[in-house]
Image (cartoon, rainbow, N blue to C red; front, side, top):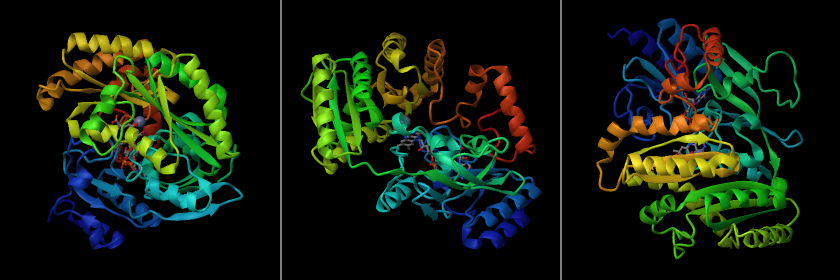
Length: 477
Ligand code: FAD
Ligand code: S2G
Ligand code: ZN
């Protein structure tokens, strides 16, 4: 008998024996996606309904056992895995994956937290609608995790983050009560807007069990272009022209450094990355951009022609390839989405998920590249990301002849310090879309004012006074 035997038996009666995992390899729930940290769970518990989640939470609260809500476990800030104590319950929402209701006239869909993002995208497309959240992890991340982290991705430039796409939530509170706010109303000014407390709270205030999300009409045509640009300044200039020519038709604008692309060429040789023949010094960056048109493909093409003409005239595009069909478009996007995976194949790396005013990104990168290359000779810079919304993944790979583990052990902290100090100077954010988790919790203390931290602490203590919801994530009490 351990001190938790009674609780575990109780949980087994709630969710069924097979859905309380305590034996065997729980690595899938305990390793963080970057394979940098592994926790140890008391148990992985997989409820199938909101009522079961509520009962599980109440039982854990009664037993004084803390919980880590988990979706697809693709988070990047060590927020969805248990700590090493062996005393936490991982509350996996993956069995709650139903699409409860699609309301065409209201342009909304109500979906359970454990629904995989790609499944929701596909179901909406089949019904003739667009659910416009899109990120490279969409094959395994879940709507609950997207809301937990307020995920961004590649269409934020047009549709905003997950927060902007959410109209209502169903939540099990830290006391095990059920708050149902799945109204689907676009206007509802009746007191505090509670959904916005839970969106981006990273499982520290309660468990999101379902959400009502916005739908959009499917565009008549989406065109994708992959362009080689002579500088990061030119990429920013091209973004300005794209806004001018495409306006709300601009639904994606990603920048990729040539070293980042070289990792895709190296690790995924079957992918055809354009413009390999252009010297890196002539085109240090490439851009992939998407135009979604509600008129016709002909109209979309005509708009793209005009955009590319003015971009070539302005000298901010060296060469461009426009996808001829959906398969080609998918191939071009797949190159961009393969960068994080190619980085992982190249070895352990240091990630910075930062945002800076778009206009200032070129200067930040020029300064930072120079500073890191001077301080850490041989360091390899993997610069890429969502330039359209000012979110750069300014990642650092160990020098090719270095032991990556050793390099990270000794250099990650000073590199983080350099990057984040500069981000501060540029009035940027140290976490644009991935959140804080436990990875950046101490950093948050340095980068937020005492007033802001005090308000966050008050919210945490008001909603989870026993600190049993994902303790030690986001805010240090
Ligand atoms: P998890 O990792 O399981 O959990 C993430 C956080 O949310 C944790 O704090 C967890 O406690 C909390 N949580 C999970 N479910 C719930 C719930 N039901 N209720 C309350 N809290 C909950 N992120 C981006 O924003 N943009 C990107 O472009 C992007 N690209 C990525 C590419 C790759 C290859 C990978 C591996 C990750 C990427 N990510 C990106 C990070 C990650 O995919 C997102 O943070 C995603 O939203 C996490 O979803 P998940 O279901 O995996 O959540
Ligand atoms: C992306 C993935 C995380 C990283 O692909 O947009 O959010 O930096 C990133 O590898
Ligand atoms: Zn990203």
